[in-house]
Length: 186
Ligand code: GRF
Image: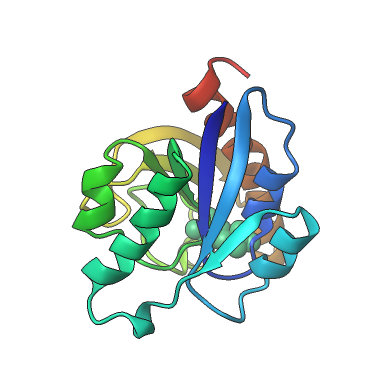
């Protein structure tokens, strides 16, 4: 059985999509959350998934914060870290320990529209297509090796319709890629 840890900071719809997937030989072992008020914690309760709220401000350095997370990941023998709306950069401590074992989902066709407002930015730029990218995490910002991309056409969609469609794609793609990375074809 392979074990997955999800990191999330806010709403957690991607976390939920993962939590409710019936994987083959994969267990969603735990949630790491860096925000005490994040709604994702409520979702984790429903699925009875072990949650660790680790608040960066209570650590003197980023290294100490990440070492605390690493201790939990090692204790549970985590195989893959999935960043699903985790609003922090991963530092050398976690990157060193989990090289090529950390993936992130981003709501644009990277390298276009990096950053936190990717859907809005693409919408206002009036591009013909935007989409979803899942990539490995490295030292760069939204720049690691791309695993999969799927495009979504803007056409004459409203911003909220576009957001909804992108999230639908995310919720389908992320569990699929986790299964592929850890257990062959889904
Ligand atoms: C998603 O759009 C994801 O691509 C981005 O942050 C958002 C998180 O949404 N990294 P949610 O918390 O999973 O609902």
